[in-house]
Figure 1 (cartoon, rainbow, N blue to C red):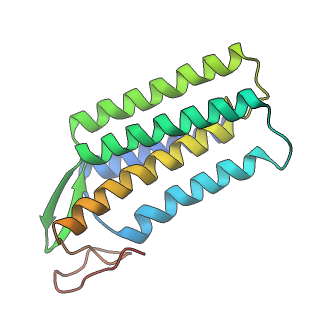
Figure 2 (figure 1 turned 45 degrees about the vertical axis):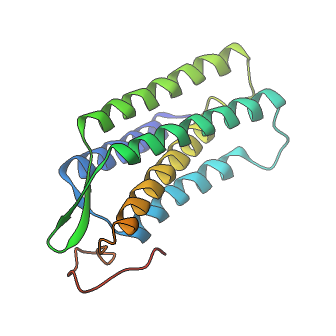
Length: 169
C-alpha cells in the first residue's frame, strides 16, 4: 500500500464524514454505487491468484465486523424530512462507531502481520473491501428506514421536491 492510496482512502472517508455530519438528502443510487465501486475495487486488488487460508479467514471476519458496524452506524443516523425529501445526518454516536470501525481495522492489520499473511488481509484490498461493505450495510439500513417510513427520496444529482419519488436503484 503506497501513500497515494492511503491518502485517497483517507480523503474518501473524510469527504463522507463531513457530508454526512452536515446532513445530505437520501439519494439511493449515489448512496449505493459508491460503496459498490469501492468494494469491487478492493476485490479486484486481490488479484486472480490463490489466497492463503489465513487471508481468507481474516478477510471474512473483517468483512463481517465491518458489516455489523455499518448496520449499527445506519441505525444511529438521524433520518428526517427536509425540503420535502428524506435527509440523513451523522450523530455523535455515529462518529464513535466510525472510531470503532477504524480501531477494528488497526487490530486486523496487527493480527494479519502476526500471521505473516500474504498481504491481502492487511493491505489495500482488505481496507477497500471493509470500507465498501460497511458503507453498503449502513446504506441498507438508511434506505430501509426511509422506505419503511414512506419518506420521499431526493432524485440523484440534487435535492428534489416531495411529489417526486425515487425507487431504490
